[in-house]
Image (cartoon, rainbow, N blue to C red; front, side, top):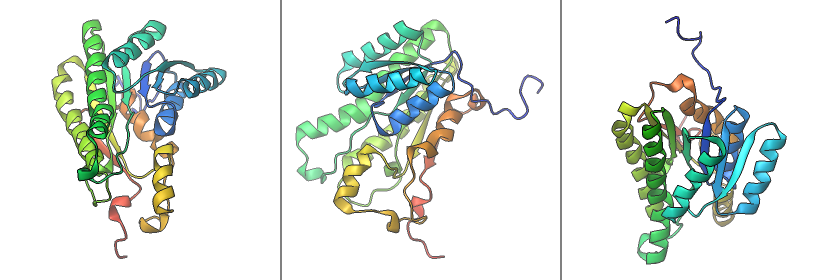
Length: 262
């Protein structure tokens, strides 16, 4: 008992090396800023290099460490290269945030094969390849690590709004989290997931443009912002969650309750 602080709630990431995908906007951008603010050196991975460069400068101006890494999440070679670049700059990656994702926003029977391949590639194949690549290097280096996959409350519920494949991939991410946590438990690599509900991001901006402001359709009459996921992320990557692996944490501000009667 004396080996632990009271309370055992540290989120200090000094000396840690993180790779965040989808870091050019939305949740990924926020995740990268938060990890850097807590002391991690961060590889910023996404397609839009100009945004990554701007973000890296802002993080460095604030006293953090970050490098931009242009990456196409459907390109296996680019995924491995992103790990290479982050490792070359900062050392072995011991935090991976698998955040990159795309919506489909189409009825299943109307989706082209190209769109099916893109959604599966970005939302499932990419995270799988990256998780395995990071784990492989951690095992070789005999280091512990933390992998956080971003699922969605679409894993738990789909109302037929035209994003069936997206929901399927997010359920697959949840199951991937559970299975890989077992696979790598012996190596002290914790694999967990966050399943956010609807948050204000660049991805949801397009949805809001189509359907209007959804605030009046959820129990708390508001749509949360990315900063309200900070504590969940820091818990899963920080020292305090050493014994937590295979967990899926739903963060939806009560949206699953819909408009339940008082």
